[in-house]
Length: 398
Image 1 (spheres, helix red, strand yellow):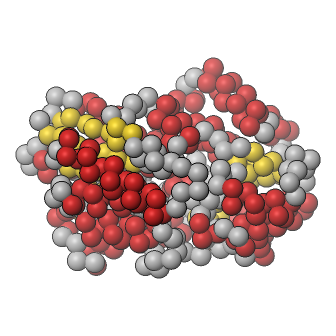
Image 2 (cartoon, rainbow, N blue to C red; image 1 turned 90 degrees about the horizontal axis):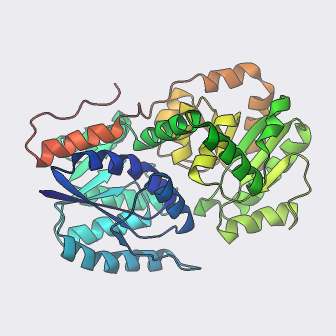
């Protein structure tokens, strides 16, 4: 029986690996699935594991206050050394571009264990934007034996870098699998709806405010390169917009990173509870976040995953970054890069809030990232590579 070890450490990775784990569990007669989490994010990671009812076989639990990239890399490398020796997997699957994924791929390489890269081939070709994610995914790309690219654009990046085309499978993005799973769960469970609404209220926002024809802009931010001036400019833009659009709620689930919050406090003061239409709330769990995103009119973010998720819900996305490794969304019109300049962020959001035609153009664009079947394609690719199945998976997209 073949053994597949999946390792991840952050909330975004868990969200994107969860549907693959659920799908692998349907094939217990042919493969043994081993799950190792690093705990690079602790609390936010555990929330996702709970939602999808995933119990890791191993937990490195590396999260420490004030940890830096040196800490994460060294702890993952050393922690996985013993686990790989003990489990002897036939392949290690890593996801995306986190430091956990880069160190895990390196750990597998040191023991000459094949590596499969989920979400392979995303590139900005600027190793400092996003930092350290761009160099992480390039390093993983050099190590990987099997590449599961979400789109044809990401596969072309790999081919141009000299990667063997036979090792590349275009699958769509597993984040859309997760999104559809969660949306179906929310829509089919009235009790869950009530629970989520109450949960969001305790975190600081009453979703019932939207029943009186109010609109809502959902904001998220966490990128290291935006720390300092970037988040200061973002907070200034939100403050200005909130005064110009009193009938719009600006909801910002603040990242746990104290350096992100410091910039917000610098602009708006330490008491964020007295604003009439700005809501700086605690980070939402995954189900609650999807619930709020589904109710939002516009999403303002520096996140990678949200660039993929929000368009499936017909939400225009303004990306507070200068570069993106997801150009397909920009080309499709579902996403617009606005950077972190205060005036640019303000102008882009102002246009969508005041120009119906501009809003419709973005919200009606087609999401290029997935159809909810990426996990099935990845498993068929693994069957093809490891279990003697002659059929390659159906290619996603054009």
